[in-house]
Structures are given as structure tokens and as C-alpha cells.
View 1 (cartoon, one colour):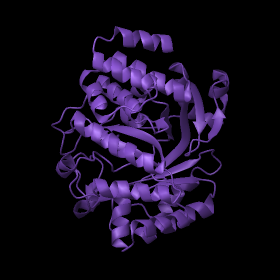
View 2 (view 1 turned 120 degrees about the vertical axis):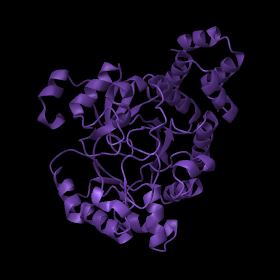
View 3 (view 1 turned 90 degrees about the vertical axis):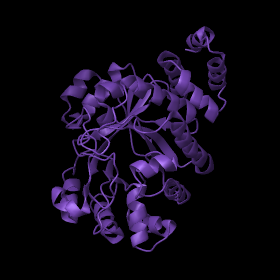
View 4 (view 1 turned 45 degrees about the vertical axis):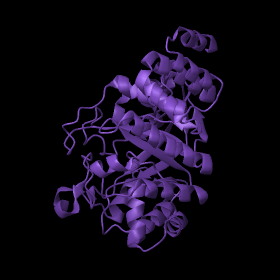
Length: 389
């Protein structure tokens, strides 16, 4: 591999890119200016080769997935993000859905006896679904299935809950942790640049607030993920600034598990006039993220957003995780026009998709503890085992 990388570096005519590549090979941190140059000048092949080298140094051919399902309590929301195709304003709540605690517990019970390891709970910000409401839900999930890892609530949801309950961030997170919350997803980060944020999601938690919630969670011993919404009004500078703020917090807390770039989808929202970026730009973004986010152990491609074939491509551009089985339990990206209108893959399908990319499929739990290595399981066993379908 190193000989191939060295050849690519030698053949690169841009001296600035050769210098950056040498930093990467020597495991030295690249700067914000380096990251910007990669966006402006880096070819797909150059970026892909470098990102793949980093990915294989960190993880070899191992590619992670988990068995999970989502609960989306409501799509009714007090906020009005212009890029969102999912939520319905509280003033028009008859157009949305609101699940009761009993209905959400019915979803959990549907997976009784099945080897899922995680429930992912995110949704709109509903004024009646407050901190006590969700704490009660968490306690009931843990009482019913203590081993199920609960990953829940974006910083947007948490900020609203805590303010309404007149609690500090630390008080609110401690309260939810005691009720059963195990970790936080990465949603709501969007783009940290305040001017862009003002244009696309002015009324939700600020960049500083998002980072504070995640930093506080880390200090309480809770792991979290981080996202970035790309492909809308932001520039390359805004992307690098966003990744740099995350990288700086990770230097301080070491609490992030994975970075998840999320592609803007333009179906049925207030930003539908903005064309979506190409798959090539997707792959370049993933590759640069792998190079820049040097202290993030994992880089995830969320397959319901990209589509399964495009997610498969990212496995050669720095990505080592493609999320989980999901079981058609999320509507956030299907409502925005993603290729996956019914996002569900069986374990056998996920393993096959990873194998087809020449990678080794490893089932993990939420915190990346390995559950099972599927790289040596025969295809016949995958297809024949009802637990994997």
C-alpha cells in the first residue's frame, strides 16, 4: 500500500499537495489551510488513495455495522429549519405524528428476542414531550430490556428540554443518564458557521450550545457522535471550520466515537432550489474528513442518506462504518428524497454489501465493542440463518 501511495505522491504535480500528503503519511496533523487546499485542488484519486491509507492504517479491512432500530417520537417541531423535509410546525401539528409512551414501548417490544443492541431515539421538538416525559420513557425501556443501549436526543432536543425544565446542561444530562440514557447521536450540528446557521436554522441551538452539550456529556462519561450537514450554502472554508471545531473539542475530551457527514437533500423543503452535490463531491468530502479528523477513531457513511451503493463506494474513501440494520424505522431522509425510501437492510444484506467492497464485516455495539466477525461466515449460512434476515 505504501509503495502505491508513494507513487501517487511522486506523480502529483502540485507541490503543496505533495507536502500535505507527506504529512499524512508521517502521521502529522494537517492545518486548516491544508484542508482548504485539499478541497480546492485535490483530485478524487489523490484524496481517495490518501484517505484509504489512513483508513487501513487505523482499521485494516474491517468495516463496522450494528443491529439497531429507530424510534421517532414525533415530527412535530417548534423550530423551522429551512433544509428540513421531515418536521411539521407545531401550529400545523395535525399534519404530523405524535407517539405516546405506550406506542413507543410497543416498538421496543417488537424486537423482543431479536439480537438488536441499540435503539436510536430522535425526532422533532414537541413542547409537550418534555424532560420528564422522555425520562419516563427511558426508565420503561431499561426496565423492559436492560441490555439495550439507548442512544438518544440531538443537542437541539436537549437544549429545548433543559431550558424548559430550568436545568443547566449538566443537571439535565445527569438526570437523563440516571433515567437510562447511554449516549448521544450527532444530529443538529448542521454547519457551525454562525452566518450560515442564521440563514438555515436560526431558531435552534447555537454552535456554541451544541458543542457545550457534547463536551458536557463527555465529561460525564457519555460518548457521543458528531455530524456535519454539507452541500447547501456552505463553502469549503465553512466545512473546514466545522471539522476544526469538532477536532479541537475531541482533543480536549476524547468523547466522540465517530464523525458522520450528512448530505443535504433538497426534496420538499425551503431550500429545494439548491441542487444537490454530486457523488464525486460526496466521496471527496469523506476522504478529506478522514484526513482532517485525525483524532476521530471512526468515520461513518449513513447508508439511508447516501443509498446503499454509494455508501459502499465510500469504503474506499476513508469510511469504516456504514451504520446499522435500521429496519425501516426512520423517515428523516426518505422524506427528504434520498434513494432509500424504505431504509431497511438485514444483517445478511449488510454483510454482503461490505464483502462485495472487499472489506471484512464486523458487527459492533454502539461503543464499537466487537460483537461478531462475519468475515469468515459463508454466504450460504448468512442466507439460511433466519436471525440474519
